[in-house]
Image (tube, rainbow, N blue to C red; front, side):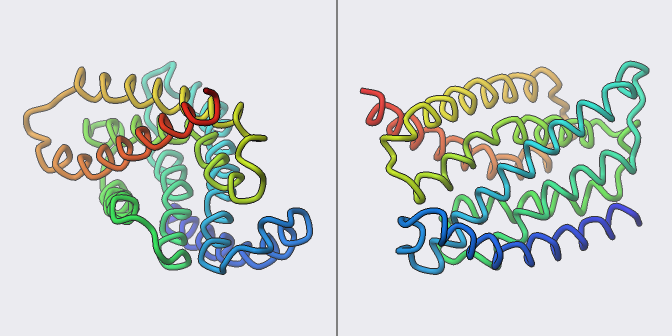
Length: 219
């Protein structure tokens, strides 16, 4: 129950954050001020997500590592972390128009996985553990969201180092994550693998775009 309340609070908080962040960015960067509203919301969504994911990485390592040492998977903690992660995707779905189909499918899939995770026992469920692995891996790629947002606020050439960090971070984390997902493969989790393909597809689309952008900016 706590994780559901936290999810609702996080959705409310993120939704309320859009307007003050929009006002602040309008003052700070001239380029942002010239964007259309849906593009401004896209920027805010990614900057909020980058901040959220960085925070979740720190919290996860700090709070979960002691449990992991004793092979204990605390349901409330892990469900709460997942709830905060997905809340940003949910807000983005209804605040940002014009999202790519692959991104929308990604966000809807994460929401479905979150609802499922609220019913799973992380200590016993292999699917829950795989979901946690994918979620934590995704959180580690927060530099990508930072670049996606900042490129609409500043000249992309000024962000070439950020782009390079985002590309290589994303590439390494995705490959390692996919390898681990295969290593811990389970025959009875076909529904999980079928749904996770929507997330993998979006990862591949974004990774290809980052490669092209990195090659262009760091040629």
